[in-house]
Length: 153
Image 1 (tube, helix red, strand yellow):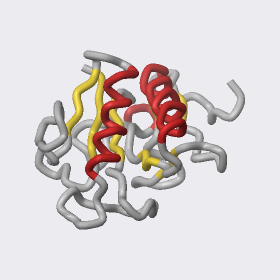
Image 2 (cartoon, rainbow, N blue to C red):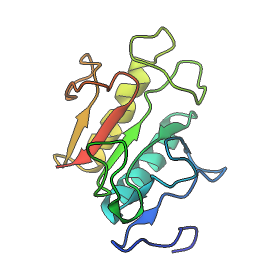
Image 3 (cartoon, rainbow, N blue to C red):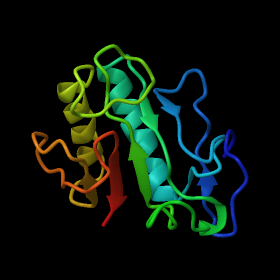
Image 4 (tube, rainbow, N blue to C red):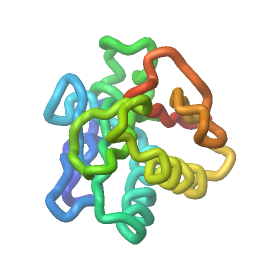
């Protein structure tokens, strides 16, 4: 599997750090992918969403925290199994910086379209937390105004 970082002891790979031709950008703490290890299902989901998203929108979507290598606990109560990912909502201006669903620069229609692509790729297998309850099928969770959290059930 060319382009992948070495596996950790769980067999999880680090997400490729946003090659120029990719449809996503990376963010998160710690940086440089140190919290972007995921199992094969999550990477498959992200790559499938990237392909579909790139066909309908030229903006990149932001992929944040997933899991640290070896599943080491850090500043999250979750994100230790490699089956969860945080993603930024989309901005109307296309910039790759944070936005909250309460801000004027937030693009609800684009974010809803992105979330729908996630759901289509693995129907019935995902839970999505995001506090913009005007988007169908998301669940509210404290601290999720500026990112949505996707996890396998």
